[in-house]
Image (cartoon, rainbow, N blue to C red; front, side):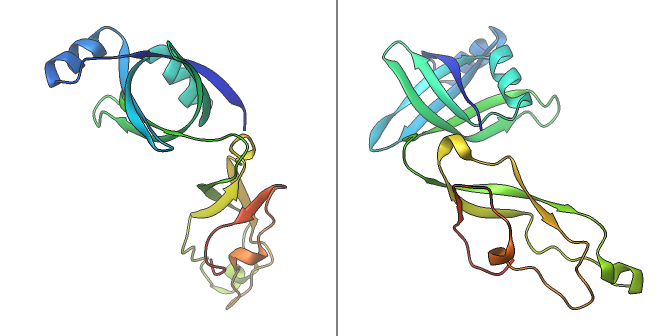
Length: 172
């Protein structure tokens, strides 16, 4: 996964009216927390953040007045009507240490058992893995063409990308 740089500005605005004015000015409120430091309240450019979200970037170098720090996009809150970004949460990270993340599973193929009336049941659509922040996969492909009636695929059977290890129970 690509590590991109995003510009943040320290913000003092914290009340509802001040946040509304911030959003009207084309900014998004954000918070950065973790690694034993005090949370930092920031504002981000809405156009820049929308572009990064469209490209599915999750690991950033956050540039601000105090310098740069590595962060992971932990949560994004959207307006339910307009799908506009309302708020962003970042987690401080160390780019040299593996971190636990949830990665989407993508099921590929038509199971062999479906021709005999079977139905593919997927208990999980995400899996928890440990990965270096710059090597987090966007998704993990699960090939299900060989799955027959009564067969199952366990997490330990998945082909994980290099540098990615399982961080969940072995059943899937």
